[in-house]
Length: 550
Image (cartoon, rainbow, N blue to C red; front, side, top):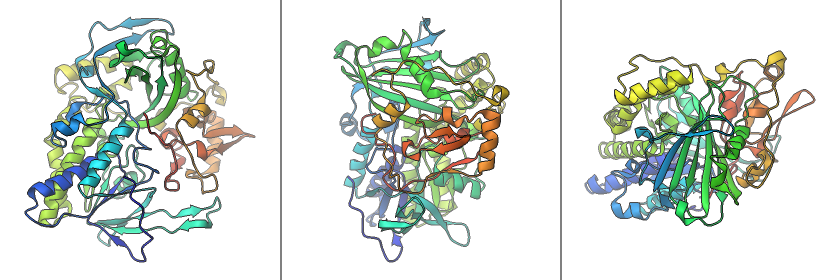
């Protein structure tokens, strides 16, 4: 699967389609493109399709729940291929609970229709991604790992014509080391951006080409662990979703427990990043969630064996940018395609990839990769079930940012009226604007549950994520203005110490120190910093988390 990388070319490498990122959205694009060409190509040669992935191995940077809506596979995989997917279980029992306090749990007598998942597959998205990559390679795609793309290339008209990878083998001072490899230039007829949430290239492209949506994107942070438990075959396929504790009043958060096998449980917690209190520590909230009497029995006698963290785009329809420009398409989480009520985006990512792939196949047949040739992707998306789902919940997340009662009312109205109500665009401010100054400039240090095999601290979880960075390389987390950093410490009490789920930021001697080697690439710091003073950039290719089981 990890095709040996070619030697650095002396001139640009020319390909037909270049996909940046090897997540499920990009791989669905590749699969649909090559299969559509095979079906409708009329004897023309297939395009050369190349996928560049920044992680060391396919799936290393992929993280999700994951209870998967089977709509993900429609028109993309046949029945036999769906049966061969590496899925651990299917949902056999489901429940929904309101955690009314640290000890109280109230069962909801029925699972809300939008949350029902009976029969849905449960599995590791990392494993499914690796499986999809094998299918893509069998169709003729080339996949190269360990290449972080640092820049998109444009011609004099602004058309996207290729990309440039980052140089590798630089030391902390930016000087070449013995293993130095220069950047490489790849020219392509079309670029597919499937970088995931808050993509480095995607965000720059949207800003440079005026592709912004009418409402800013807003995010949540999801943290997740895989727990090995004593064998309990009876609970295999059981899932639980919760809301309430330990989320603060007015904050948007909830948890999940998925029994993926007789001996493994996935446990996670998702918290909206529009919270106001600078001392909020989502990793600590996760640990409190696991300690609740309604949750702890699911993990009894077990130990945590894997960890991950990832941000999730929750803004909804009004936050989806333009997804097409001259020479480029945006798919999946990079475009904010996620059902913010169900917190489900895998099916949207894969179906957006399918539509993008079919559009690229048609563009290849008529040799038109300009806006007129690629615009069919956005039209197809707007006519698809994806867009109807987005329209139905377009104001739900923004309503929750006002208060819980309004959010619940908006969710109910949206579901009952298929999105007709609320009919207006509910405004929502960017996540970093929502943060309020600390009292007297000092953020209260939150209490933490006792550390145990079922409740690891930050650094133990970072170890369990497999995160590795060469420490003798330029720091990929850039603090843009140290004076603003000092002001943030005074006004907000250094909130980066709390919102980072990997303990990257430390306050010592009145200064913020960055342990970038801990970074799990969730990008919370870039999203939540109140001064927008932190910029995440791609580190050396292959570095970062190594998710293999979650």
